[in-house]
Image (cartoon, rainbow, N blue to C red):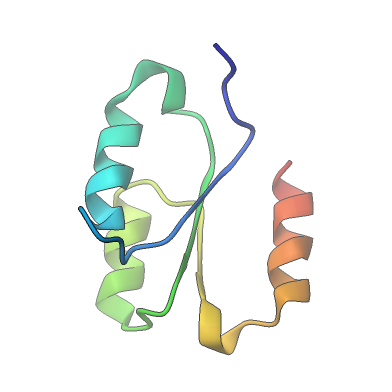
Length: 78
């Protein structure tokens, strides 16, 4: 019923990976324009590039990013 203002997505999940979720989200009419921020411990440039090419607005490596930076970005987006 309600469209989220933002999705924060991890890439490593038990049943599937975040790349698949991101692909599915961006195919959904209701979710096409919902911003997605990826928050993961995968820090390789190819992972960043893939997430961005699938529609992620931003990408943060959890272990390298202070929570204050993530909060600031979330506030900026919403």
